Length: 280
View 1 (cartoon, helix red, strand yellow):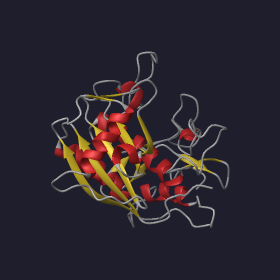
View 2 (cartoon, helix red, strand yellow):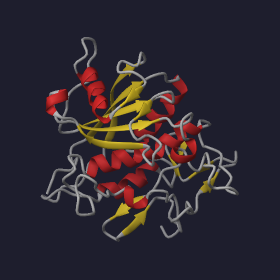
View 3 (cartoon, helix red, strand yellow):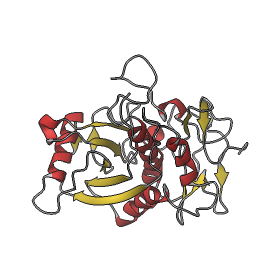
View 4 (tube, one colour):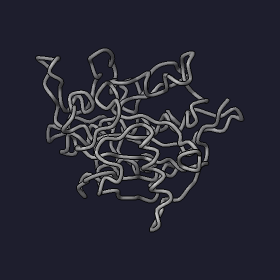
């Protein structure tokens, strides 16, 4: 019975730590591709169409429009190089209350995306956690704002959080595939960012779309399809993906870029779906 994001969605990004211009371009390119018209099939916007199927209790669908909002750079690691789940909220507070160019506060349609660079450790990072979403506490931030954190795993655990562009040691015989944008850490982040934006849209206050008896440990629409990128996926098999002429592996097209993004749960047909499904 909780709300979903039916208003146009604006993603406000906090770049925490040291980010190269090329890395920012890849991530911005993905976010702007979500609502792009005319991307080559299979497309990121085709992937978002599954997310749009979800409604609130009035029957209103999740918005088709996801756009880039304001950005804030926190290049001096204002809260250090090791963050907890609570100190992440303090980073967001600093961004929305900054003296110069604060991020706008928009609880109804704003998503706050905190991205940490490869030299920053976040509580539980790499321990099967590559990103998470929640909402800010008014007691810390002053507002209830849906937010997500995603970290660059390139130095800490690419085999966990940038698979299949990197393969963990416990999977001998598996070869990593070539990433579509030439940056293993950031290409790995794209699917996690997609995962979190999809879940923020369908379960922003953790009281809307989730499975399981416990809303404090919900199984959400992207959790159900984690690791599935194509038809036949499941277990340690990613499913059928696409390979470009340059040898890079991807499963959907954006604006002038290609991405590898996990599928999400389609509650209408009760299985994981994506735009590159062989039966579409």
